[in-house]
Amino acid sequence: MVIALAKIAQSTRVDEDIAVVEIRESIRFDNAPALARYLKSIREKHIAIDLSKVDEARTVLMAQLIGEFQRRDRYGGRIALYGLNEQTKKVVSFSNFERVISCYETRDQALDYLRNGH
Image 1 (cartoon, rainbow, N blue to C red):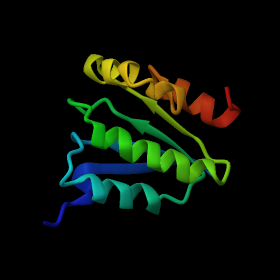
Image 2 (cartoon, rainbow, N blue to C red; image 1 turned 60 degrees about the horizontal axis):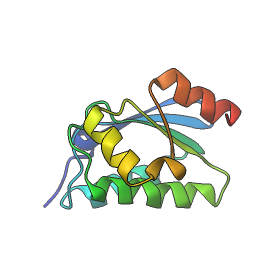
Image 3 (cartoon, helix red, strand yellow; image 1 turned 90 degrees about the vertical axis):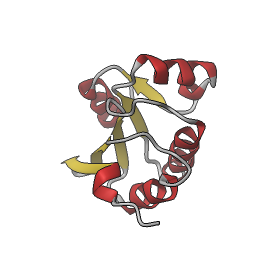
């Protein structure tokens, strides 16, 4: 099955080292590999990931994000999430996911973290 990447996610470069990725649909087992390839293809060092259009957070999405965090962390890169809905916040809180990846309410907060490290 071929998954159209533009349907899953789209990225925009905001700084020399920062890309913003908008995930456009819920990530499931069938489209998770395409998301992983897409995130790996982003050349910027840091990524802010907009989850506002993800209506259901599943463990497969969290696994992809942790994998990408570990890959970027080896090279000094960071990932910040923002735009989490209430269901996604519950999954993040329950799994202690925020211990690994920083989560913010807004895009500006996420970008501030990526630019300044706090």
